[in-house]
Image (cartoon, rainbow, N blue to C red):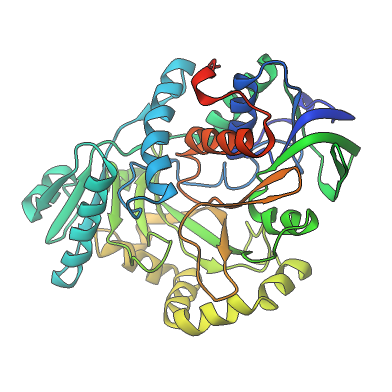
Length: 422
């Protein structure tokens, strides 16, 4: 859930560092920068009336261990570091987590090669405790799951990431920072000594800025002078949930072997920190960057997607996958059958609708879906251009990475070795 607006402070007229975006990544960045330099004035400017209003609170709450990501990539390094830090932080702050473990299931022989590649990646990334399972091993961990082989990641867990985001906001305020909501950025002007950020409450002069704007990252980057490539294309992910008396079908987390060419993990079954079992998500290209309802369409968002050359190149390559996702979104039985490939006892009457999220996915002009975290610079600013999952897991590590970049580019933060903690 997002933070109530009555806790918000007004946007300051001036600050040393402005963080644009009050999601979990933006809040983590503000927290990190304050921890490195307590003398700096740091302000978070969030467009919505509460923090963590979008991807940070519309997700399955999985703390990823780092199995999927290409060794050497930012996602691989920052996910492994970040998952360890999230567990430690939540223990310190009294936020509930559970290392319930994840089971990645291969249904048939055709998936064994990809499963082996996941195991190779996980071991190269330093994911702790990975082990390969046969069919009997799968049933020992998840009695209702079926497959010919599996990969078990015992370090994967669950948490409420909106609770983590609220704790970050508390840390920011305790360190003297400001979290201002209802501050949608409408203009960015670079001066000789500052950036002028025009927003819904007026304007803020900032020495430097870090843009962590999620679904609106590309628009704000372009306003600040960045290349329009990559473009954010929103993908709506809808979830079903098991009715209470069928939750025993899933003990923890059951995932398919994903297509390595796509940055999506496929339909999976996840028990969240509240005990609900989710099925999903779908991955349907959306008509709005906040399309939590399927019928929500915003003209500018739709035009941005349809006028981007990369959209059509992507569709030409992945049209069959797109039709499958459309079928899943339109026909509940098809969605359930996809999940029942891993839990055969699952039936349509076992589920009911749950929530939807919107993934802010960066898409290149060439039609390539960006797989790794991506960043760019403009005058006096850093921009987070692609930070979908596992950004929440990696939030503290991403924040450290950005603070290092800021120290290099702007000389605004203390070196990592002088980090004070928070």
